[in-house]
Image 1 (cartoon, rainbow, N blue to C red):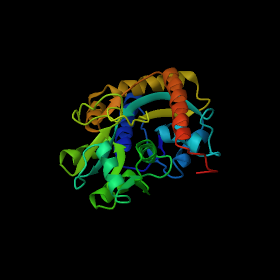
Image 2: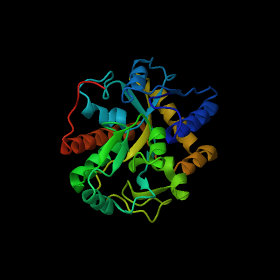
Image 3: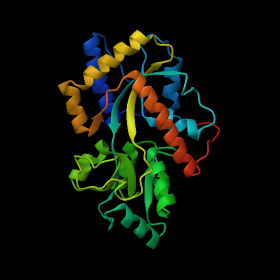
Length: 293
């Protein structure tokens, strides 16, 4: 299992748990390999070039297949032709958080604060095209804010930077920061999705605050294109079964992840809609593709 992101964090924890369970079900060890870099293109290119025999898979989020095609005019893989969707594992609900020292408690109050004190707020991102940066761009564009993006290589760098006072805001998967929110070290301003999170029921959605771009992160599993349909169907069934096991369910609850477990055809259709939606949002924000990652 190739994972085109760094080790550690919500995605890595889930993939290792699910892969171990699937390996036990199939009687074969499942090795998770982190291959980060190049806006996640390095790992995905390796997956695309692997033999389509079911022994090399990859797992990724929207960045690689929904966002990168709109961000870069040239990619080392074809998002339409190089991968066979197996299953969408989970939806990853996100949260916009700030440091507890900040005097605001909502997105609107944050925007008002930024207008009153231009240049006072920094927002940690994972670079252009990351969900953290897209949410910031949307808030700056639609809300009239001027918050400064500060790029980092990973969430595991952004959170310490927030706790250390280098940045005051970020968007992140809820599982990354739920414990820090519970401990009173970070303050949630808004959650993503169409409804409030059951683990943060008092925190409004971006839609509640009328500034929602309509993006929601997810995690799915893919095989190289050309992998035979019986193999795809068997893997879909095994991953769906793994999501129902007590051990994986415990990880889902701990990381505040919403299981999906769709069919390959349903996942393929979802991907088309998700990429088209991302394209509309990027166009609205004036984001144009650069040459290469």
